[in-house]
Length: 171
Image 1: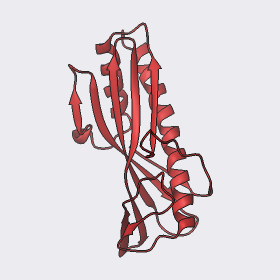
Image 2: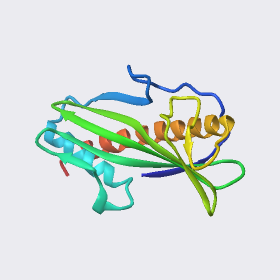
Image 3: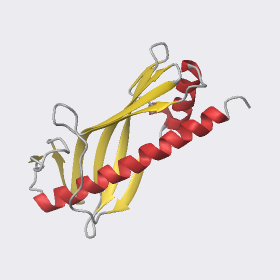
């Protein structure tokens, strides 16, 4: 999945889990639907956002009702080239409900056509701890806030797509 936005925000609330790492998690009720119906709608909805259908998921098990995929978010600073953020999206399905959980994998700061570095730190941390280059705290703060905002919008759109696919499941 890929979304892009211009970067303006500097300070933001970063949702964290009990370990202090970035995590967004939500349970969505779908009481009138079976586990199989929800799973199928969730997979179908995912295909609306992924450009390469051959690599739709990193893990998928219909019987236990879970799959994991990777989301890519592009943040374009006011000056410069895109910064790419990568997140896991895990979807777990039970009768009448499903849970989405997203966490941080890594960030690529693309400084120029020839210069890129990876940020090893979790997005919840103040410093980037980049491999291969120096990333200013201000740039890290701006881009991670924009990436989280884009991810939250993307997850809301995904939930809407699941609801639409569920409502159209009997066509």
